Image 1: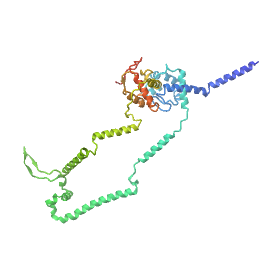
Image 2: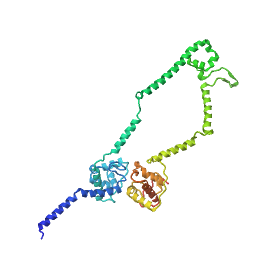
Image 3: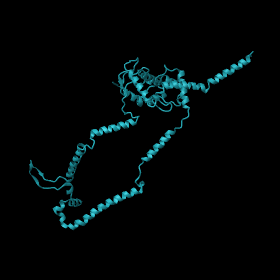
Image 4: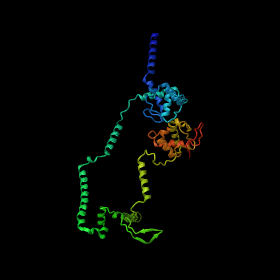
Length: 400
C-alpha cells in the first residue's frame, strides 16, 4: 500500500513541473505562434516589424509603450486619440492621420497578448547580416567611379600632345594669312583702292580688318529706284547684306536636299514614323522594367468561380482590415459602389493593388502577392459592385 507521504511527494513534483512548464519558453513560443497567425491575418497589411509602412514599425513596441497601452490602442486607437493621449495623437499625426481599424470586437485580450508575444519574439531576434546590400553598395561605388569626371591634366600624355598640336596648327594658319596680307597688300600700292580690288573677296576681307564693314553689310548706294517715290518716301537701291544672301542660298540648297532625302528617295523618317519608332522603343524599355507603373497592361476580368473564390480568400486575409469583409469600406474606401479614386477597370485596380498609394495608406502588394493573385483579388473586387452591404461608406472619387 502506497503511503500518504509518497502520494504528497509525487503530487508536489507534478505541480512544480506544471508550474515550470507554464513559465517555460515553449509555452511562450506557443503564444507567439498564435500571435503570428493573428498578426498576418489582421496587421501585416499595414505594419512590419522592422520598417514603417502604413503604420509604424513594431520592433520593441512593447518596450516603448507597455502591454496595457498596446491593448487599449489595438482595441480602439481613435478613443485614445480623442481622449488626447500624447503617444496616440503623435502616431496619428505622423502617419498622415490614417486611423487604425478598431479590433476591440474581433480580438480578445488574449489574442492581443499573443500578438504582443509575437512582436516581442521578433524584436529579440538578432539582425541578419546583409551581404547582398554590401555587394550592391560595392557595385554602386564601382559604377560611380566609372562615370567620375576626369580632369584635363589627368588625361593621357598623347591626348595632351594632340590638343597642343591642333592649337599650334590653327595658330600657324592664322599667322600665314596675316603674313600674306602684310607682304602682298603693300606691293599693290594704291591699286588696293581700285573698285575691282575693293569689290573682290580678298579686298573686302582686307578692308573689313581695317574697319570697313562692306563685307558684312553690303555696299550702300545713293541711287533712287526710278518711280519709287511715294508720299515723299524714297527707296534706295542698296545691296542686301551678304550674310543674309548667303543664308538665303543655303536654305535653298537645304530645301532641295530635304525634299530629295525625305520625299523623293524616302531615305529619312518623317515625324509620324519617328514618333511610332520612339513609342515602340519606349514600349520595349517599359516591358523590360517590370516595376514601371506606367507600363501598359491588358488584363481581362476573371469570371470563373475558382478564381473569384481565391480572390475572396486573398481579400479577406489582406484587404478586409481596411476595406471591410464585404468591401463596404472602413479606413479604406467603399469598393461596392460606382465611385473610384484611382480608376475602376480591372487594369487600374490591378495597378493600385500592385503599387499601392502609400500617401493615402494603401500599401503596395507587389512582392507579397503574385501577379495571378493580384489579378484574382482585382477581379473579386469588381464582382462586389452593386452588392450594397450594410453600413457602407459614403462614395469617394469619380463615378465610372
